Image 1 (cartoon, helix red, strand yellow):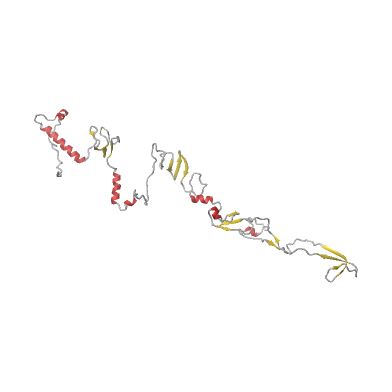
Image 2: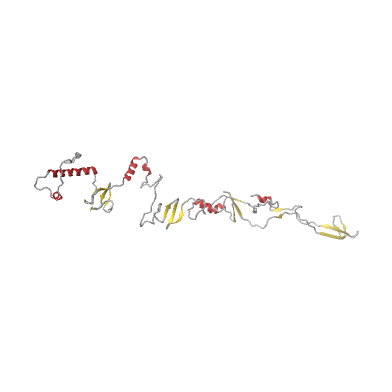
Length: 336
């Protein structure tokens, strides 16, 4: 069948002529053997022309409450096109979703599709089902937990439920409307018992030994292995620890007033000045003569008896132990 050229519909029949609408009974009966009045014929032709012009102008007719519709009808209501799901009459499309449904996607979807077709590199911002890798920055308004039976499932950022993850000044986790955790940067674990700390802050808190602290142990293992953090070096090897003195008294040795200063020896040989005042034992010998060796010869009776006083030597001149009763442990100092 050849395509029909659209006729001129600018003028409706009898638009300026004499028209009379016949009664409902006459419209239902139609013509009999009679001569049709010209004014009724004008009305019929005018009605048909206007109907054709209406469809040409609107494309899809408006929904009418008195019209019977089939399950494949398409109508327009409040500038939205609906398609029928069931046969109906008097069922307003926007309020009877079991009978009618929107025939086409909203205009915004069409706008986005236009962007996909016309915007350079727009398609790279989409996530594909076959390869769901998203590299662009995603932005959105909010996620809202479903109202109703699903009210306690999912996450909400706008406060529609009492359970879930919400956003105020920072993300907050609520249980029955009570805050149980807050996702916010903290520098001290004692700042709040409800804030969620990051691992670096937690590790700093758990590292009870700070740089400069000493770690005493009977194990030869480096504290880095045992504690899991820090750089350590052996400290005070072979030396006893002495507390720092802040005293200004001259009776306190100066070496105790400077950190990491050292003093003392393992052994010490006393000088004459360091020896306490003392007396030596005395041996008196009588009735003898003086022999050539500087000793008293008590067997000789050739001369008159004499009295001699002899000072006896004692001691071995060795250095003495200068260490208090001790026990040896490993001492480590944290440097980093």
